[in-house]
Image 1 (cartoon, helix red, strand yellow):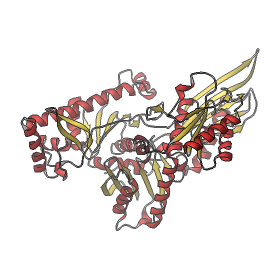
Image 2 (tube, helix red, strand yellow):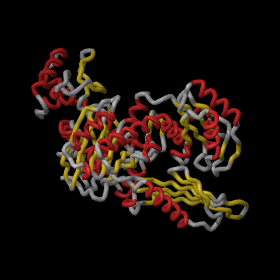
Image 3 (cartoon, rainbow, N blue to C red):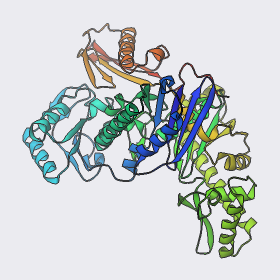
Image 4 (cartoon, rainbow, N blue to C red):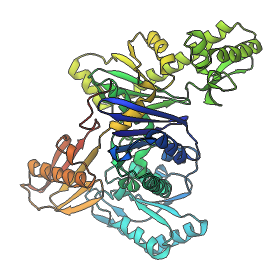
Amino acid sequence: MLIGIDIGGTYTDGVVYREGKIIKTAKKPTLYEEIDVSLLAVLDDLIKDMDVKQVKRLVISTTLVTNLIATGRGERTALLLLPGYGLPHDLYRIGDDTYFLKGSIDFRGREIEEIDEKEVIECIEDIKKKGIRRVAIAGKFASRNNLQEKKVQDLFHKHYREALTVISSKVANRLNFPRRAATAYFTAMTLKEWEGFVAQIRSALQERNLSCEVFILKADGGTTPLDLSVFTPCETVFSGPAASTMGGKAITMDDKNAVVIDIGGTTSDISLLIEGNPLYASKGAVISGFYTHIHALAVKSVPLGGDSLIYLQDGSIDVAPYREGNAACLGGNRPTVTDVFNVKYRLNVGNAASSVKALQELALLAGMELDRLCDKVVDIVISRLTEAIKNMFKEWENEPAYKVWEVVNGRRFKPDRLIGIGAAARAIIPVLAEKMDLPYLVHDHSPVANALGAAVARPTLTVNLHIDTAQGVCMVDPGGIRQQVPRSPAFSMEEARKIALNFLQEIGKKRGMEDYLEDYRFYKEEQFNMIRGWDRIGKIFEIELQVAPGFIKEYRGVI
């Protein structure tokens, strides 16, 4: 048996999947400040009266890191940058506690300016005086040589051992200094809280005698083992939209182009499947307005859901970008989007009479007929969702996979259908599909498809390799590994591919991915000759290969 749990902004959903069927589901309100309580409440519902020894796998999709950053509750964090020469330093600033230090590495990984230890120590004393206990350290071209990052970290260990330090080359050992710095910064900000969450989960599973494999869903739609997630907590950001996307794929299992819309209580998550495969965000996840090196799907969250409040302001009816409780038909005190669709389309969700009563009271205050109020709200909801999807297509069309599809097929991309996910999908998706003139699918399991997507998602892994044969070094991401290679001008692409593949196998086995390591694909293979005088003195290779998002081998679909 497989268990998937998705912690959403409004509800936490869970499923138990076995041999092509969802045999049990659970839903609980998400406690924003105590998401571990929500998680365990759903887990307890799922395993009640069950032989837990039969549970092979548990996958969790959580909003913990997203919430910490979005609400500003992450601990105060300092960012130490070694930007070297080039753009004005202020362009790299993230927050008020950003420090710029001397020291520089060039694009080949050669040190061209040493760090100033006295300056670093003064910086450490200032950070200590401010009471800051989280520190991220990032140097330009540290992905080529992280010597200076390590030196700064060593000085912290010597002069301020209490501080938690993160160096960028360990969490994202790739080019693009601003993205690497942002990734290190948000990792330092959330690391301790994530470690605490993981410890709570471990303890809770032991108490329940659950000894199955435990994974966390990442932003790229793949999973990572719970124990390894403590090194890269930011990979879990936007795991909710990733769960929705994988859920849309899981309930269809075909190669059609589709827009997936998960209409939750608070937000609607929008993503794209191209020939059945999730579209990647090639520039990485955007956190608080900063691009990062976190692999992520190209998703968008819109502040509009089934529990969005309907209210009267300055004589006009509008839909709020937030919720104030359940729909009236489900025991709430004020009318919501769900109530409007319940009345207009006679859906008989919950207590339909309560929907009518709440909306009639609002219509009376607004001085309009009930039917007119419902029409207005439906127009607002459908217009906002349609506009959000159109805006997302403007972003999606810049993604390489989207462009490649149009080139290969010789026509503009158009989705074959909408796929509705979430409890409110059955009410809203048919109307939205009619407006967009598209077929739609709302599966019987759509209300819990996000949890299903988490349960059956397979591990993912991307390996980036940089080789400089003139210097005899290679650098690997993930992990910031630096290794020697032969200083040979005759070094070939085939040899570089073998090294990259060996790292994929080595890292993948440590992550328990043995069953999926043969399903890899090379996405990038570049070779540059280095010339000095009239001679070739070496080569530079850039290689990227990936085990892409997909499903565990035993998953063939759901009835």
